[in-house]
Amino acid sequence: TIENLLLDGNKANQTSGDMSAISFYGVGSSTLPGGRLDGLIVKNIADHTAVYDGSINIFGHGNSVTNNTFENNGDDGVSFYTGGNNVITGIVFINNIGSGISDSAVGDTVSDNTLEGNNSGTLDYPTGAINLDQPTGDTVTGNTITGNTGDGINSWDSGENNNISGNSVQNNTGSGINSTDYYDNISNNTVENNSVYGISIVNGGNSTVSGNNIDSNGG
Image (cartoon, rainbow, N blue to C red; front, side, top):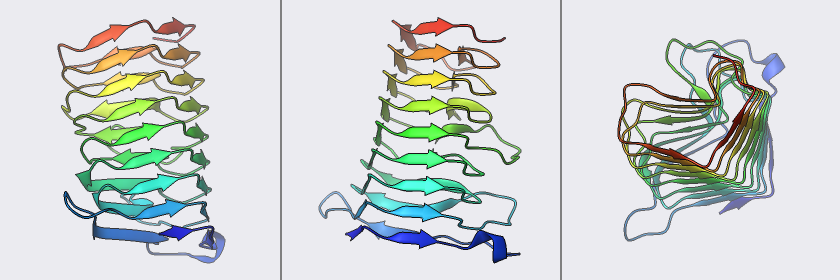
């Protein structure tokens, strides 16, 4: 457990290289509990490389990242790679250059987070304030996603069986929710005033889209 810390990377005085505040490698398994990060303030972590990773990076199972603040970092707020069944909840992501949350793990729960003003950098692949890369069995629910560059939620690269429900996705410069997955459930979201589409399904199939409030988007 790591809790109740301020981690300030002093980004203004870091002119090169790539920093991370915390990395978990192989923490947690099907038989061992994962780590816990709670009550952290992570800000001003620098990244001068072309590919964003996370201010915090997680490789493992059953990790809990809760009640933290990620602000003004030069890369993603938190990134999940291999592993799964992680919990990301109650976090505030503000003005990070990359995504607030980037997730390539399996069966993760992303809930009740606030994401605002993220994703202002430029990458050559699709991204969103919540960016799910080949997701399988993830649950994304109860998040407030507003004023980010690009999509609010981007679930891409042919994932499947994800549940995206009950989110408020507003005033982002891309689509509110973009999916290239199969068999997703996209339901009961409020998707308003995004610059491109409200909900976009591209190349994927057999997803269910129901009960969403979609209003005043572009496209």
